[in-house]
Amino acid sequence: MKVALIYPPTCDPTSPYLSVPTLTAYLRSHGIEVIPIDANVEVHERLLRGAVLHEMAGRIADRLVRLELKSSLGHADQLLYGRLWEVMPDLDWVPKAIEDAVAVLRDRSGARFYDPGQYEQAVQTIQAGLRIISAAYSPLIMDFSGYRTPFSTLTPQQIRADSQPDKNPFHEWTVPPGYGRLSAAPPQSDRGPSP
Image (cartoon, rainbow, N blue to C red; front, side, top):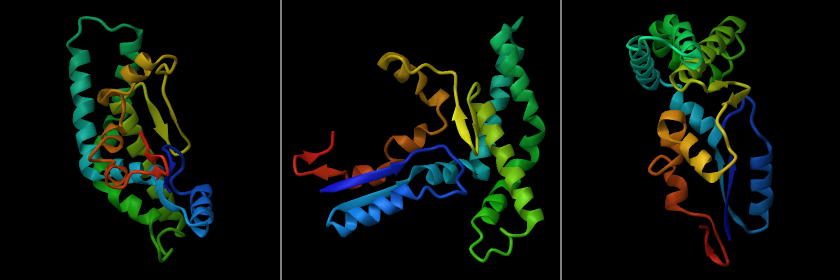
């Protein structure tokens, strides 16, 4: 038997989720092949990059242009317009600073991670990056503590509609080739591969 244990996004990526490695160790000690995946960390690693945030800035600019071409804005458009403008000051500096901020949080030596000033600046930069992603995919709100969306999850049709690429910053990661590890070595049971 081969199983995949997946910790899904999105939660604070600086706090490891201990259930997956603990269960992985237990299952492996009983002869079960396990693919442990911290999808939360992997998604943050993909999104919190200068090039990705630069693309998000372009998406925000395009959304602003479309709104500004309208003769009037309804309530939802007014809220979106405000959210897009709120992140405009961050678009100049965050894409340039994001990779260094991530490096501070991944600092194995601890010198930068435990420096209060560097740690605080890194957290502020990453939170600003998450605000940019949220604005690019508004009405989504994504931060270290959660992922909130007003999308409906009542029927399969609504779920499918609300998971389209333009509403989902994780889309590229959750479909092949982004999720190639499971495609290359799919989980199995003695009944055959998983559907």
